[in-house]
Image (tube, rainbow, N blue to C red; front, side):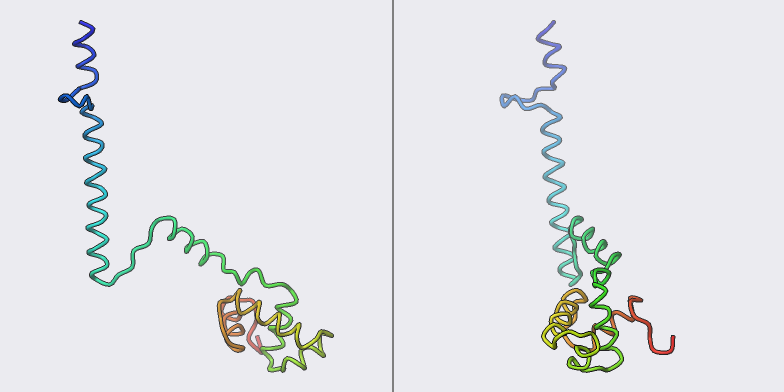
Length: 136
């Protein structure tokens, strides 16, 4: 009786000794991979973007909490003065810092705001609510 219970309990198939449930599990996993691959190819053929779940989650976190929130108070001061049209030398004199330090603040802001010119950080900061437009 023990032998028949063992065979019934494990649902053994063939000489390989693999269980029915394990074989089914492997088949479903293979089909799942194949379906995901097929879907990915179809999406790529339509020139759409596919994001893996971890990548999508990271992107959503980044969108929901932009790096701009990490601007230092001094960077915001410099950005405010850029917004009113002061030159690097004028900003340096106003804040009692060197032109090189002003440039360092600007370069760091460019990276944080993901921009590459002098006007773009002002626009991005206004859009994100870090700076107010003149008169508001």
